[in-house]
Structure formats: structure tokens, C-alpha cells
Image 1 (tube, rainbow, N blue to C red):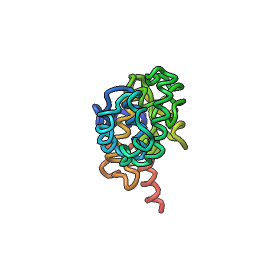
Image 2: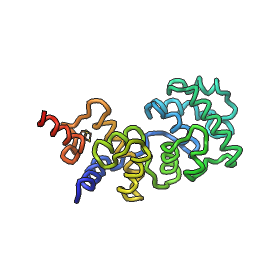
Image 3: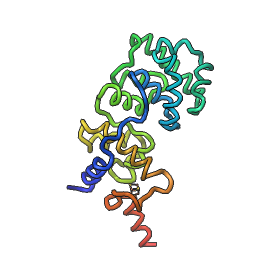
Image 4: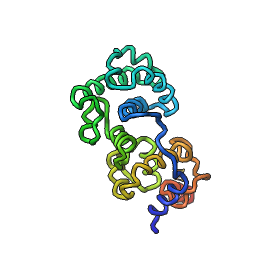
Length: 214
Ligand code: SF4
């Protein structure tokens, strides 16, 4: 078993069972929750959508809100002006171009306003069970540090991970890598001394070399 296979095995053992942290009851709700989650915690998004979806849980109902009204409801998620504008624009596109249903292909999803690769991949896996690797800030950082998915941008990392991980496990590993990034391999001060992957981690072993040489 090579280093990368060992890393995947340990991650799987450690985080098996971890899934999507966003609450949703339909592909549309997941799309909106994912759009709200940019630079916001899942916990905060769930509090906001719990309130929002009481009265506005379908595209038809959502369009009853103005940008300002929606902005007030989602304000605590941050970036609320842009999010509000994109959510209403994407919602109208779903009604006008997709008969009110969230499309289930990558190419159609990324054409929606405010929807990028990450959001499209999150929706495809969690709402439609289509295997994808969504690369968010945690997946990007952890994959680069470990050396299992090195890349200068999320698309490069996505390509590497997609080539490495079995297709049917892609979506699960997205969640496992996020958990590792949140709990252990944090952006600042990663807890390398408590990390079960340190023996195999490029970043950690590079640091050891650096400290020894300096
Ligand atoms: Fe992250 Fe450190 Fe673990 Fe490497 S050893 S994965 S840098 S926490």
C-alpha cells in the first residue's frame, strides 16, 4: 500500500459516517443552503434556513420576496446582498428554464447565477447521489498539505482527487476531508501532534526536514 492509499484508509476509518452538515428536504433547499454557506458555518446556515424555509421553501414561494426582504432574513450568514441577489436570480432561472426543478447535471447547474463548481458538486452528490468531489477551502487545504491532491486552484485539486479516489466514494471523502480540516488540520495552527496522518503527511514531514536542517 503506498502513502496515498494509506492516507485514504486512515481518513475513511476515522470519519466514516460523517455527512452533509446542512439541513435540507429537497434539492432546492440544499441549493439555497449551499449558496448561503459561502464564508459561513453550517450551524449558522441551518438556523437561518430553518426560519427561511418555514414560508419560502420552494422556488415559487421564494420569488415572493424582494432582494431587500430576503437580505434581512439571511443577513447573519454574511455577504447577504450578493447572496440575496444570486438566490433570487437563480430561483427565477430555475422557474423559467427548468420548470421549477433544480437541474441534475453539472453543466446546467453551473449556468445558474451564483453557482460555481463547488456548489454544483455539493448539490449533485447530496441531492441526486451522483458521485462528485466538491473542493471547498477545507478540502483544498487538507489535500494540498497531505499531498493527495496538490493543485494551485480547486479545479486542479478536484481533478487529482477524482483520479485517486474510487468514483463511488468521492462524495464521502469530500465530507471526511472537511471534517479533518475543521477538527484537526485547521488553517491556522494545524494540530499535527494529534493527527493520525502525520507519518504520511507531506506538509508535516517537510516541516520536520526544515526544522532539522535549520
Ligand atoms: Fe494537517 Fe498536520 Fe495532519 Fe498534515 S499532519 S494532515 S498538516 S494536521
